[in-house]
Amino acid sequence: MPVYLFWGDEDFTLENEIKTIKDEVLDTSSGIEISPLNYRCLDNPDFKALIDALRSQPMMFGDVVYKIRADKYFLETTKKVKLDDKQTEEVIKALEMVSDRVHIILTCPIERNDRKKPDSRKKLYKAVQKFGSIKEFPSFKAYEEYKILPILKTMVQKAKLKADNNILTMLIRQVGPALRDLNTSLDKIKLMIHPDNVITAEVVEKLGGESQNIFLINDLIIEKKFDKALFEISNMLNKSHYLEILAFLQSSFSKLLTTKVYASSMSSFDIARKTGQNEFVVKKSLEKLSKISLKELIDIKQNLTQAEFEIKSGIKEPLLAFEGAFFQKSERGAV
Image 1 (cartoon, helix red, strand yellow):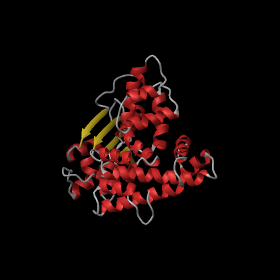
Image 2: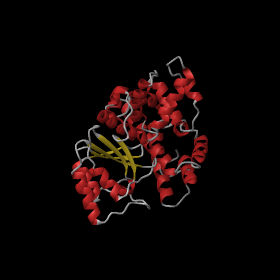
Image 3: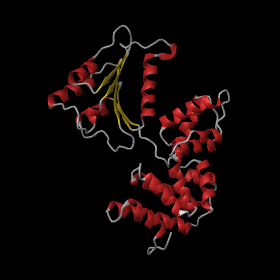
Image 4: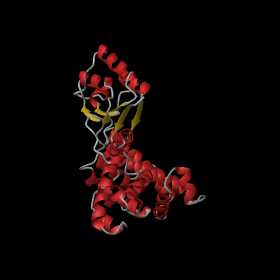
């Protein structure tokens, strides 16, 4: 049944999924402009407008696609749409009876890094799950380069540009993990290098951006330049939540620790397969790991865990906790 609930904080892939459905259902390949009778958009409609959309029938002009923003129906917000039991049952019945030629796409876009999600206990959610399909579109974290790389490669090919993995990794670090920002950057690059189509390091550097700071912190810690790492963290705390920084560092050093352990007996290819990382990322990590011992990695990981405990329990302010992780001695020894 053509009923969908799309939600998440990666709006770029969410919108692309809607475009794919729209192109397939309404056959946009001919280039003919889509009639507003075939593609209709509603923004958190009231009960009557929602019921009318669900009960609508296609006419002689073909299938219909409804894109309905419905976060006020599925998310806990201060302005949520309230349905009584009778109205809820009517909506559920209408969902069950949606015409095969009327495609209902319910969307719940979420602010990036917001932890909201649809309440799976609600009858309305369970009805969509039963009669249609539900798909989450989560954003990528800064440390998930290995997940972003294949998607970025496809975006580069679609833009008719060329770049190797090294350059694409550099682009992710420069621009950040948000796919829309990366896509916009590719558009800028295409204009910058025209009529050429090869992306170079020099071009990426010209884009600017502040996302690379989080990777810089990671590298500074590995190089034991703790004062500089603390300075960068101090700057980042002015615009980022401490949990975002901690999550990146914890995940990054977990992967580095695992990679270091496997490095004595495995190739970069085997490590990548074993840990689920991209082999290029593993090779870059192995270069960095030559500067630090296994014991030092373990100490860093443990000290970061201690810093997280101190912050969450209110023992220390975030910056002081990070400072303690890098400079203070503990029973485990100094970092």
